[in-house]
Image 1: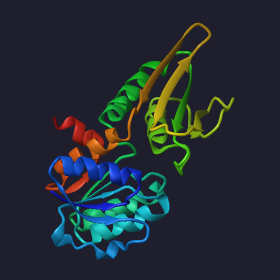
Image 2 (image 1 turned 135 degrees about the vertical axis):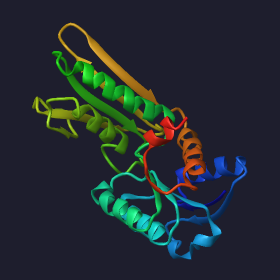
Image 3 (image 1 turned 120 degrees about the vertical axis):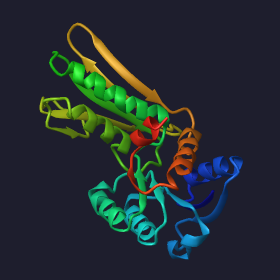
Image 4 (image 1 turned 45 degrees about the vertical axis):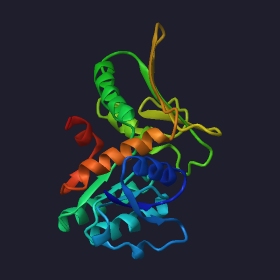
Length: 235
């Protein structure tokens, strides 16, 4: 598989290592000082985009407009996601976005929704906590937002807020930034008598890179808009 890496920070370098080990070729490595317009669609099979929120939309638009299958793990740009999905359909392209590529996290998403559906009629209060490395730009994390959206589907709460709150209509997401933490996410329910907490911990950045390559292998010959749920449930 011939790959264009759009974003060559820590995540891009981790993906490169995994890809080369799996026998794939990195044809382009686009860092902040490089032009995405150097990518030629006849030289690659898929683009993997991990950049910054202010760059993601333009990067994804370029790929889809030039018939390049693309997967993205950049968070913080989702107000424009529907525009990218519309372009994908218009161009008969290939696009997958995930707030987190870890297979474990995506199973965690499904467990989160199942638990939320069971807790809906019980007298528990809920909140989400997330801890990431200090270089992470967005807060809360995209993964925490995905967890919140999954919980809210099965809750009488109306929205999430990125702070502690006593407003029973709001779901609290508490964010922390600490050195060298790949990612920890927890969903907690508590009452006066007991508490329940489910947690996912990433031990190493390579867990995301390994999954990103597996997803790229699976999706680059397909057409359409996909999610990690599609990937997990195809097995």
